[in-house]
View 1 (cartoon, rainbow, N blue to C red):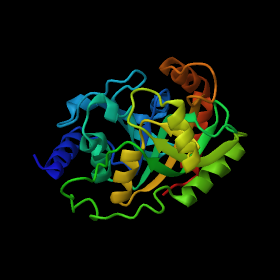
View 2: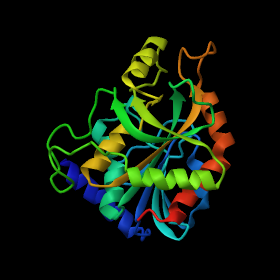
View 3: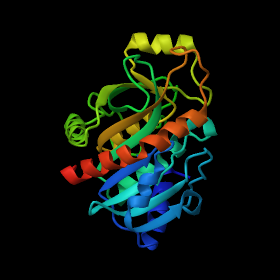
View 4: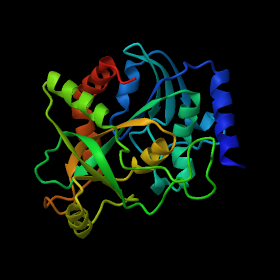
Length: 274
């Protein structure tokens, strides 16, 4: 079935649920999904109930849409995301975002858990993503272009909105949280990267590394959304410390930073991102 038809069927299903028409979309990464509990007048819809959306299979990802209001702004949240390593196609990875965009979002706040390549970073830091390196080997725009969504050859020179980054940095200062700004490199996963791979992307200019985000940001840029990307540094990347890496460590740090993360995102919304 043509991709646009699948997206439209998803939109029609959610409209029948009478969900709030959103203006801001949020994708909540590993360990960061609790922000959805702050949404008022909310409607939750598991992904697998929506036509053409599979379930999310990763621990720490609830796998549902949450519609409602956060700081009086109508939002659509993805409480958990899809990953390429789960076996989904690039188009499936971004279909929920395309559905949210067709429902009305103009701004996307995308979050993830990431490993620090930059050894000046500390576990628990938040990094605003200024740019990315796509080392996943995939692109959700490959194939026939859905002209209703965007152009065949979208510009990626400012995929992450500089003004939104400034808003985020101002809010972080106001709550006493030091933040970083840097380049995010995405690998396909699910294994953590080798020390040699980390050394390589460090030389390319990467500050943090993860297994998500880039497909969604490519699709968001294609559709003309303003994007703010926030990485929570949950671990030091492979080879920077002698200890092995684990998903449990990622979840544990995500749990610790939840209060600061919620304050930051709610503060950004309060500052006015529209």
